[in-house]
Length: 294
Length: 237
Image 1 (cartoon, chains in turn green, orange):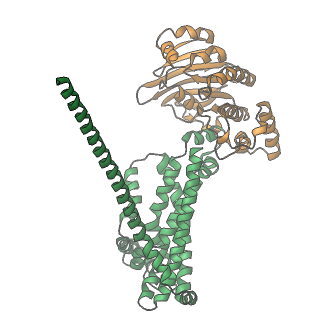
Image 2: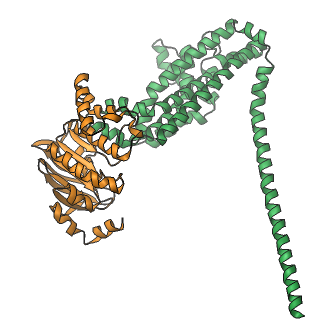
Image 3: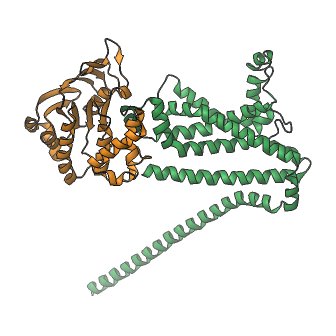
């Protein structure tokens, strides 16, 4: 009798435990599903937040008016100036930034930490602050500009000032990427080249640069894109003169107060360029990873 | 003859090495990981600068701290096979081997002739167009050796040349390596932590322990050194 009761009690216990396990399992499954739904919703929300304004730009732009605006001197001037200054900026950043990035990737020198922080500073510095800082340095009454002005050179409010502002804000994007690309190259490859009779310069151009090339191009594209979108520093240091210092972002802002179609036309051009830049960087970085895994 | 007497302060110990290698002789530099073997090769190749000392090759000073002589690596004419082979991954097998000739501005036709000769001798002509990153470990070792030998080096340095190969390939390569190096008739130093390589490849061996050569002798005797810690380590690996 006692044994039977004990058996019944044992069976009940087992059933209870099964039920507990079932409830626990169900709860954890619901939790996992809830988490998935939550994350999915968050992702959709984030996508919509970025995609909606971009899509609206295309959907709210009347095509015929946009095509007409393409012939507007304000658009053509801004497009020409933006492409020209951004190209010159990128060339300057690449020529001056590549040796700096290489030195920082391979050598140590006193004050390197400070130099590193200075190189990165424009990334976190508000563009308007960069603009006023440039004005204080190179403006007519600036620290260096004062002497340059005495010699007959004037930088502020010229096309050169646009390039100065763009170089200031975009150089960290290139230098950081280039430095990482150089650091990723196995130093024994450079050493091997040296033992095979290659000078430092020959090694740099025949071994280091080809191996870092995809990364360098990605960095240059990012710097180009940043230059193309530069607004704050340019308007403060170079002003807003059509054909001389009015780049596309400045023209968008100016046109907004008069002809919205011109503004939309310039915005669409910038969006298309941005898409191309992202696509190019993605393709190139994928090639970098592919090469690295080889 | 290569004569080296160098000192360099390293992070964990002071390296103080004095060694000489005759023309055509293969010296096996044996020692545990981190005892300074690769540093010795880098000092001889000019990839690192000694704090003091001298490095002479056939009477020519490559480094002399007293006379302030320090010939840069590209002017030392030393063939160096790196541990990971250091083949240029963006170049073909052909271009890797031709690299050292092109830096010497040898005419293209002559480069072509010499590279073809070298690749055929090493059995690599068939894969001349392959990317250096896509060939097997054994092929990489052959390419690295061919690349180091084609410049007709005055000294040959090999850093763990067999460590990246599987055991079966190592046995074949030991013999091949010994024959190829002996044909060059230049002083050669091979760094290894594997005592099996010593008797098979080397003529003479030196044991390096925390920056100092503690034992030196004919390669055949080297197996007897290994009664101590080195042999235990080697057996364990």
